[in-house]
Image (tube, rainbow, N blue to C red; front, side):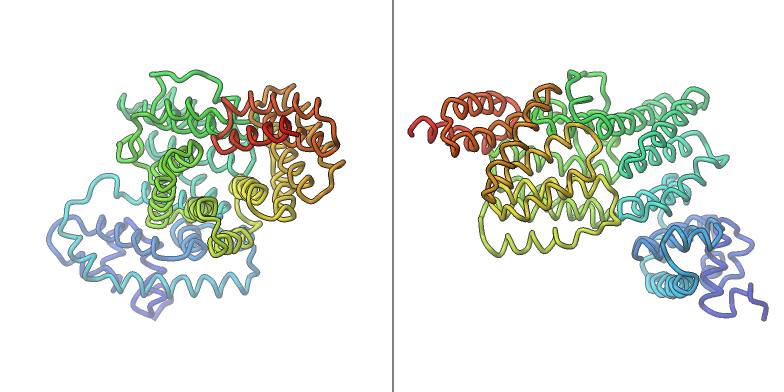
Length: 490
């Protein structure tokens, strides 16, 4: 039998299936699909597409990326191997394993898929849209090269304007998380050019505008700092995705009241937030707001847990990792239990350098913050320096310096801590970064207090408290007020 005969082996069957998606004539020959085409009706192609997509979701991101790019997208295997950092031998071994896994998953769901075939298939279950969802999952899981290749294919195809616009928006967001801002701005420009020329229904156009604006704001935030978009007042004209991004930026800069105002009325079940990533982001943001305000300690844990579960269900491993980290961090903060501390640190110690830089930035800043507050100063210093290395704007660099100053103080390196705190305070004051200024001045006040300079300590802690009153959490404010009482009492 010739190699292209799908009946020759399971490998030939899966390879033939993936290379001929959408071609009914070919799929009627395939032993994996011909039974569906023997049934009356014209839903066989859609059912096969849905079946392939669900099988892909059950696979690990690397294997799914290989099948999507080499077998579905016909990409050059050498380029795919290079993108995945695999040698030729490793790539072929991985591809063979991917086909074997796909075959067993696909064949293992016959009953489920058979029942599903009798149901009407909606337009949004078409393979190009599922391909975009899969690309989003790959990007979130760290397989950014494969995600970019798939999205570039869609963006450069002759597909309808909405599909290409979604691909451009995802590419812009992916570039932001990789800290490739110029490239991301180019994708935003491509999306806006398409919006100006492509014909689409008004509601569809408005939704795509919202996604593109959200991506543009993410790029500006990561490049210039959260206050670059958080300082703009809330507007009723902002749609859901852009409001979500601005709310997250507002919380990062310490403006919890603005963040709460922007999230008011947002619902993860809303059609505008139908994207699983946006729904998870909203749950995570609400958990962070609950933790920041400290009104209900258990609410933040519940929301982080829901966010992690939703991310896992949708194959968003990066978001699942972040929500799980924050859940364990929050538990440790609430209980101060050694077991919770151990659980959190085990997660932190497994942070992969291959993760997107923005995700590493979030995780290392959180680690530095919690270790400085209730953990070990040496771990806090290492995390602060790691955060500084992936910082992309002044706000983040000053924050990392402030956290490093606090770590040095707890390690007993008083002079170094004072120098770092003074530098961070000066830079934060000049840049208007009030939340960072509060931290730096609190550290500076402690240094002055230890050195016996009560006048300078009082001036520094008063400025810290004034900033913390509006731009820090109640926990941080209480720390600063407690330090002021110690300075006064002496």
